Image (cartoon, rainbow, N blue to C red; front, side, top):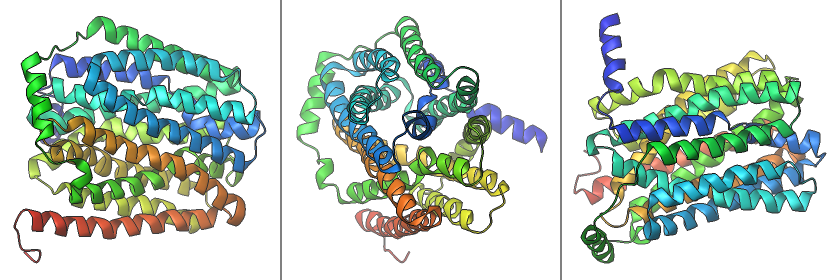
Length: 411
């Protein structure tokens, strides 16, 4: 049994190209410095003394910048290639993150966070295109999971280290470390990963192909999928806004404890996501059904907050939402990639990343307003209910896909 488990774990990390490993290394360095986001709502309320309503608006600007940046990044990637977009985006983001600490007004911070996220999330469509360029077709799901593992391993270090920096230095230290690690990561990227040149004939063929294939805006199953992705992200993003406030205000945790709690997410994903994805791929589980399971688990992670005032429920909820993330996010990424016809990858992946960015626009603001007006319990009921609503859309998507494939729905 132990040998079989070891072989599964070992095989889940085999078969990747050198370029994918290099992307993973750079991603880990970048995300290890990601300390600002988990503590942003706390920074805005405790340090800048903003109201929950103002924090909600700033987090909405965060999402708006991400939304616009994702769209613009897709356009730039199609025109200039993923390599240049990734480099310029992350280098600029490093300097913008450092500058954030010097802005103290509500309107100034709202504008600055919009600009920062606009530049930062131009990176997101580019890295999907990079993964498709550097990974083998049979390894795409695991390549995405490998990048996610690097993100979450970095995220496991980031919040804990961020909590220590706040306790020992100040909030400004977060912005310095986050910005400098962005710059370090992209400098390493420049030196260790060479740009993959695409032949002009291939570019022309892709452009011609794009003109003769369906648009994502006319792809009914994909539009339904984007709605599901939006609701999944909308509820999940409470992890970075209302949940840290709940931990502090209701359960009276300090920043170090909150950082440790959030590190559970990254640590679990690092330890078990790759073998789970490898196993699920080998068994050929339906991607949409796995996304539905993810939605059910995310909803459960909110509902259980209202069961007890015991602080241990915070750990249980974090474990549940982490398991949900393992099922939902990698396979939603792959569904989007596989759904895109030749020559339309940029458009499809831009819309996918924009569904997450638009969720960020509304998630934090609505969550904060519900908490301010009705309390945390009402917010958990709302978020869990939205996950159940998304489950219904998932069931409908399965029916539409079966019909599209010519399979009887009842079969």
